[in-house]
Amino acid sequence: MVGEGGWENAAAGSIAGFATVAIMHPLDVVRTRFQVNDGRIANLPTYKNTPHALFSIARLEGLRGLYAGFFPAVLGSSVSWGLFFFFYNKAKNRYSRDMEEKLSPGLHLAAAAEAGALVSFCTNPVWLIKTRLQLQNPLHQTRQYSGVYDALRTILKEEGWTALYKGIWPSLFLQVSHGAIQFTAYEELRKLLVNFKSERAKSKDVDVLNSLDYSILGGSSKISAILITYPFQCFCRSSDQDYRPNADGVPRYADSFHVVKETARFEGLHGFYKGITANLLKNVPASAVTFVVYENVIKLFKLTRRKD
Image (cartoon, rainbow, N blue to C red; front, top):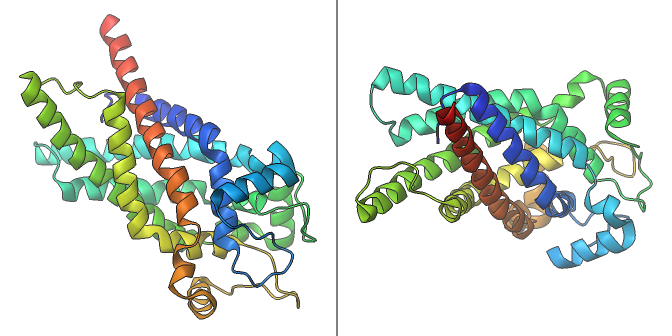
């Protein structure tokens, strides 16, 4: 999973990120709404399950509701995946030169963690704006943003620039741990599959994998990362970035620890995994799409370079 040029990894990652959001965004809207609804605010819509949520949003809000926050989402995804693959492959190449051998699982983990930390600092403002836009609903009486620029301008005016980095520490932890787990699983499973198919084909061609293989690898690695890190994503990022106040005007959550305490108090263990069905339904196939597009774009770049 290494392109020779850094720009190739960045370009392939950006294309993959764009394609993934374009296909899977409605499920991301549902996931976000499930994550921040703890049942204590009366004017929030209640959804029975993921299909019911999709149908309700489409009926009440139309296509605009299903694609709420699409622009910052597609921008964030394209930039995030482009930067992640760029930083990740740069780190892998650096470690490879140092070790002069194939990377171990530990070094894959370190490379992915390094890339995740850098990407998190670069993109947190984009994800915060996306979350705010996705939480809007015509039935709410809270402040409505007209778009990305209005959201950015209002947040800066009313909350200051530091608000753009709300949730950065749990988000940083999530990005680092989630990406490290997913990419380590992907790389190790990929090595096993390449060795298996190469032995059957009696060839050492590293391009023996096809799109179906990449989709299986991408989906499988994502499942492992989601199951381990989902609680942090649920209450430390979406809830921490949720700006809506209580009836007395006081912010619902003081900090990430307050989110954990209130979630455990009012919702129990279930609260730490709310919305996980929508998350799996969205992110497992999304990961499959991401890696299929990325790996095939990298192959295309390699083929073009050989012709030149």
